[in-house]
Image (cartoon, rainbow, N blue to C red):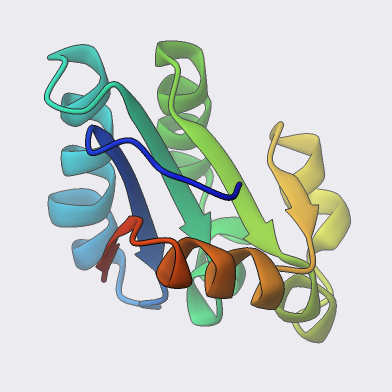
Length: 116
């Protein structure tokens, strides 16, 4: 992840608010991919969003739908460990890994980040 194309989008989802997930983060990520607004879309689960996702089966279904459509979903390992939800998110097909350095690299390389 050293350089980014202008048509790649990273959505940093940090909100523990369910309505924000459904009506912004998930809606935009999914439509961005399936409608070709961005060639690559990554949803980064960070902070309170990890806890929300681990305990909400409707949101889990939406994540599976996004992954099936080609949205790449990853999560901050420190966050999932703090909430004790690492295994749950991994079972959804989410790559759980340390995210501090990757996010820093995205930002330093001029990658597009939408924070929600």
